[in-house]
Length: 273
Image (cartoon, rainbow, N blue to C red):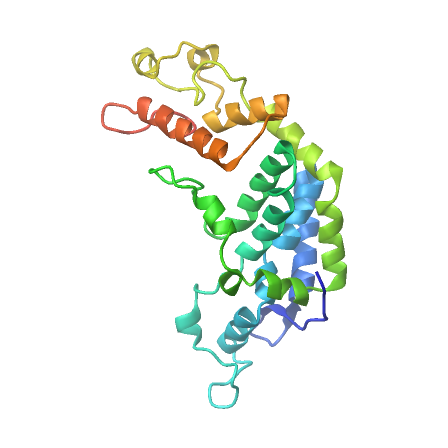
């Protein structure tokens, strides 16, 4: 990706002070790395921090922000946009997620692809809360989001606007083996062995029977996991293939288990749900 200097801003205070977008990304990445190092995934935290607001480098978002804080005037500036109409309509989270996705989804091994998905979801979800990767009909929403046209995600545009220092750090982290290995380690610690009820019910014996399991985890009711976790455990351990259709199958299986674990009034009785 080619880069050029940018005067992009992240925040404009009422007293007139401005925070450069580059400084915002560096500050956030420093904090997210510090927090993430506590669980052994410092590189992942730093990468997510650098990428979370990458889309704010787009001209559309900068025009919106500058119009909203009065730096652009409706009668004087051609770039002015109505901030009320533009609010919430300019995507600034997909570009960073796509940066991770495109690195790991094609031509990478199964482990790298799973790590890429996990980190891309974090970036894409940083305002909305954890997004749905699959809907009730089994449609792969995550892949569709990551294939969002550049005209809407601004990925190519912002990749040319981001400062060289930040771009270099992003590339270094994406190429780092520690990024993949550290996330792999934490997933293996949290993923359940592929046996018993993948969602591990915290339910009564009656509901466990409806789920068709008598696993030790269900009996104890203290551990939580998901079918996704079991699938991850198998894939990470065996290094098996992980194509999009396999991803969809894993998520569909999770939905089926959730339905089977539903209580009398349709409420889900699993800790995961």
